[in-house]
Image 1 (cartoon, rainbow, N blue to C red):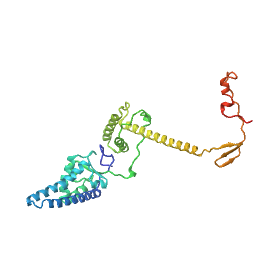
Image 2 (cartoon, rainbow, N blue to C red; image 1 turned 30 degrees about the horizontal axis):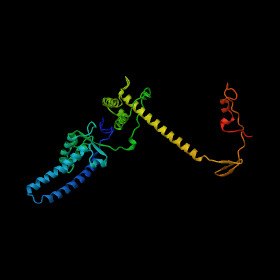
Image 3 (cartoon, rainbow, N blue to C red; image 1 turned 30 degrees about the vertical axis):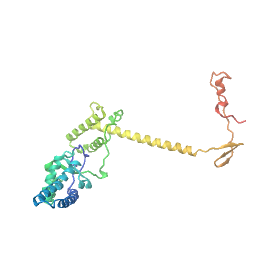
Image 4 (cartoon, rainbow, N blue to C red; image 1 turned 180 degrees about the horizontal axis):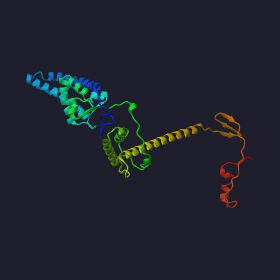
Length: 321
């Protein structure tokens, strides 16, 4: 089961990252940071060549703190827990409750990382990650964070359970245009993982998502409908609308193609002396067909205008002589 039981800005059902993937992400981050640090130190060595030893030492310590400590903290804060190494490995740092981290979380992790990773060459971090049930190092424990996997195999994607039969069609008039895709994703992930959550946690999460959905749609749910059933009914209504829209577009495209093909395949011909000349040459005329006389409406006096219009000339064709 996933270590994340609720979500705010991340998808529910994420798995905690283990030591191999975390170690690879740290190696990528360290390679980038050390490359930048060496370039900065070379530039500072050229720029501070005329300064005394104390000034050079102060500048070196400041560069160490800014590049090796401050830069990772800033990157994790601005990217909400995704450094270059974590993006390459499909990882993200989140809070224990699944929400996005903030500056104080990144600051504690970065400060502890100096001791865990830089000063002990990663030994303390590896031991703590192996001992922890969810693969957390000391910086994660003190900051209240967790590193999770963002990219999941496609086979793990589960279908959304159908809504209760008594709710089918109850939300046909609901306006869903103001609901963002992020909220749809959270609702879908909750519905697929609802049976794996703790009942109390799942109920609170369903109520929060239902309140957000009501705020977006402006229509409260029917009285007596549980939050989970309400979410399933609205998602089912949206899926039904998408299916109808796709079917309508497919049918319209097929009708347009059939009409165009029929129009392009229609021939033309000019009749001369009983022979029809068409694109393929002279074609023998068809046998004359019997034309039924048009009977005027009941009650129309003979010789009236309606009777004349209803005569043989009204059809545009004359019977054969």
